[in-house]
Image (tube, rainbow, N blue to C red; front, side):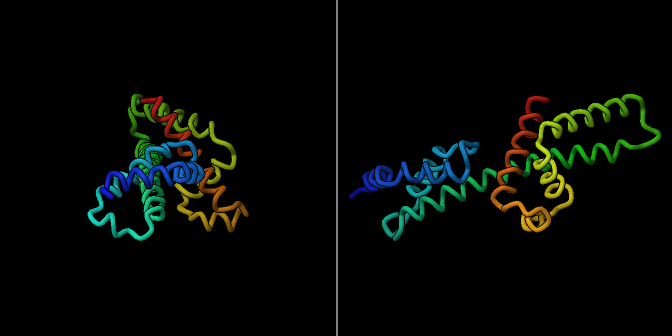
Length: 171
């Protein structure tokens, strides 16, 4: 069997199930579950030893999950950079010698960040502050709040998506 027929067969056998699994893990996106599955199949096609993969379905699942996690990691880094930049701007701008323009600019940034944060639920605000500002791990948040790791992860993901959306609309 040639490689393209083999990939086609794997897709027919496992494509729908992989899409459901990835959708259950990452939601409706971003990243788009179908894109992750397609990219996992593309990665498999690029593998020079494709015929030697003992468990192709497991390979595809792991590949799709890793692709999704990489996407989320990059996305979370961008949001963290936004939060860090906003906090740094506030720290740098607090100066008695600031010009009226600097003070106005700082005020606008603070309003922008406050508006974005006000759109979060109380739980999301708590998780963002604990995780991104205080540097607590999910496990530490779980210990102090009693919330499940899955709920913490989901709430933080939703909060960061809201902040990113607000920041994107602002620019």
